[in-house]
Image (cartoon, rainbow, N blue to C red; front, side, top):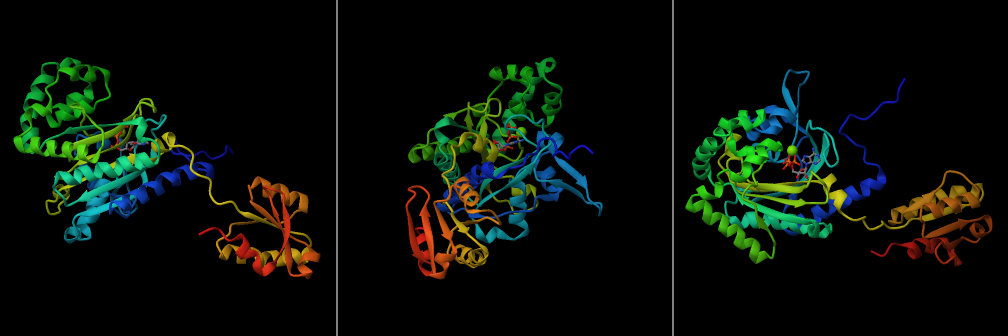
Length: 414
Ligand code: ATP
Ligand code: MG
């Protein structure tokens, strides 16, 4: 039988790599806490409608990328392709309207049926930040600042550029939509099939197309910024001013749109040139229409998601964890004593390596391989005196220590 293989577009995260993964999550957790964002989680799957309704029928995610299936009970389910819809669904079903602003951090696996390549997987992981209930531009600024600070702590902010744009309010969008349809209709033959089908339903999404023919039409396409209502214009100006006041650098990109239909006003992305075609590391925007769309009380919101795998590719190596001590028992009595001692040391928070077998030489070799800071050698003579020999594996220095003092001497500095 051929050996079993993982599913295309999925990947195992072995311990060395997981240390980098954990560093990204822990950094995001720590920074989001500083801003008052509390960690939460939602189920990995939801009724398909949660994503279908919110993503809009014309979105790429819905049309091509969802992992949808009918379960044994006949219910249409989908593995989440993103976090925002699930968190908004949870906000509604758990009656969190009284708890606004509802500021949360979440992370977890996402699933999209995409063509796998560098930085693009079918199961990948996202960090996610959402601020629900605040309609003020200050919320946009704060949400972007959390993202910038996470990137900075990971050492990747310097390799990214923040792009911002305004998608306006529904009124701005409607005015722009008309001229945009006219423009693309005049160039219909050059549009990709996908974009032809987007044209009547959501022409703005053509800005997000990866097709070269479509892209060639974009430089001359009418821009949304010419059609912003005064209110939408003021809102955008306030966000930009807040970014200036916060010391966050950005560039206005009038071509930036988001892939999902529920975005309004602010759209933003942190992009890098270091990941080839997969250059967006963190992306988000305001979604004032989403919660109403899901059947909840109309509630504004803004948030972002960042690909953990892409961040891992950019971030440096995480600092090494605390080094263990190795117990080296010699003889049967010592091996038995070592079991109790190891457990006691671990209870005190000291990482202990204890091999299941082997002579002193083999055990010391493995202690070095585990990068242990000290070896605690338990021989018959030492044990008889209630002592152990503690050998510092960096300096080679060795001294006898009484067993009941061991934990104190080895205790990690708190
Ligand atoms: P892209 O333009 O790269 O397809 P997107 O617009 O589909 O991105 P979002 O839905 O905004 O991306 O997701 C936010 C972030 O999640 C992206 O910026 C990226 O870092 C990450 N991401 C999205 N899809 C994938 C994937 N298939 N594999 C790995 N990371 C991904
Ligand atoms: Mg995509």
